[in-house]
Image (cartoon, rainbow, N blue to C red; front, side):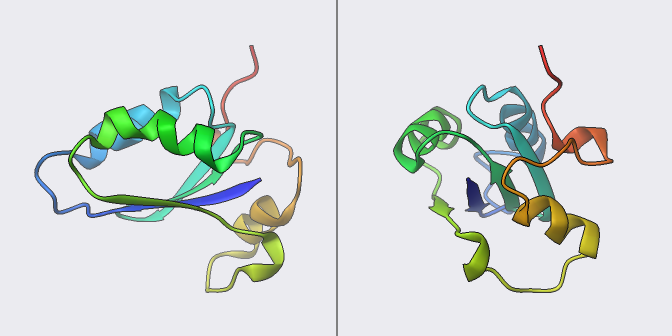
Length: 104
């Protein structure tokens, strides 16, 4: 399932490095892509509630939005390989190693 995480990258209570490390370590996130500051496209096999609750400790008092995004309800201008990754239900690991959790 595809999700979109958005937060204010200018909020001093949480740094972009902290969020990036948290996304990479989050056991509920299967893959990710950050097209610009404060935004992550996430892949997860878990429901929205589970994923949202997993992010609450990271953001604490900081505002964030996490929403489910059906593939047919997306639009924008990203490179074609990113759209292929987003729109594939169970994609192969993205060519950039930072996007997909290593298999255990």
